[in-house]
Length: 358
Ligand SMILES: [Zn+2]
Ligand SMILES: [Zn+2]
Image 1 (cartoon, rainbow, N blue to C red):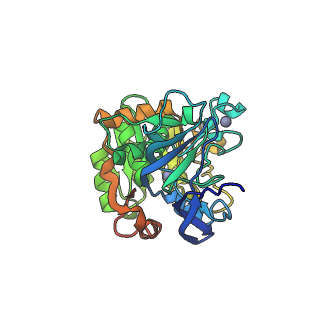
Image 2 (cartoon, rainbow, N blue to C red):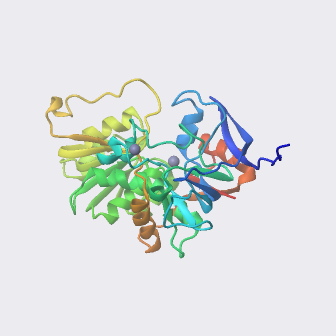
Image 3 (cartoon, rainbow, N blue to C red):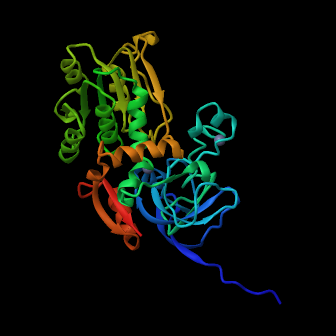
């Protein structure tokens, strides 16, 4: 008679179907030779989880949500070198294979296909769970420096990586000007990056007072409130009529995308990291785009992953260059995950980032 071993299970927070979430028991995953399984210690809820539940990427059945989490290595595949079980690690929201053509071409976020590096809560279970599986672990696990707490390191997984790449891609020269549209957690990290990367004039566009205040703390020289007038006009005034060297779209809407194109000077870059969650098309303002010949470049990026970049982002926190925990407005134990998610979904109670502790 075969011996029956009980399958060990864990609690996970899932999208049951479009519009419906809940807590579900699932078996604890086991790693293949190149993988790892992490025991989660801290996680952050992301607005993109709310987009997913709202149907932005189509139907998913009982998929575990979440893509911003840190923890300790619970089980490690035999082929993974340089780590051991029990190590504290951060895992980026994007976990590429690091082998396919797009990875080799330098676009790991587009691993295999467009947006293919985005696996958590998209094509496999995410990490809003007591344990989670990581593919290509050797390249996707980043050691957390001893001096950092989990609740600090967890910001490198998405908010810092995405916010920073928005500003990196805007490629503003030292002393140049940048406008960052939207001061949610991603936009706030774009603002922090602009200061670190040496922008000479940082303009944040935001209307919520708490976010305006944080934008200033992270380095904005001026905050433009789009409810109080045309933000493009304000940006032109602040730049002596020239427009900015770079604009970051950190919201994901037609209005802000368009304003980015209008506010950027010829030769400048519009850097989109906002998640455009609805509609079939985005429109360009034809005349402000120089009827297609204005030397205005539009770039896009999806949260770059990998341990090398994660190590650099974690170092910025460790050295005090940026304190992302200013964005932690709420804390919940994992048992209260549903309350936390609904709060995030409704953007209630001045929420910026809710931290989930395991
Ligand atoms: Zn996220
Ligand atoms: Zn790949």
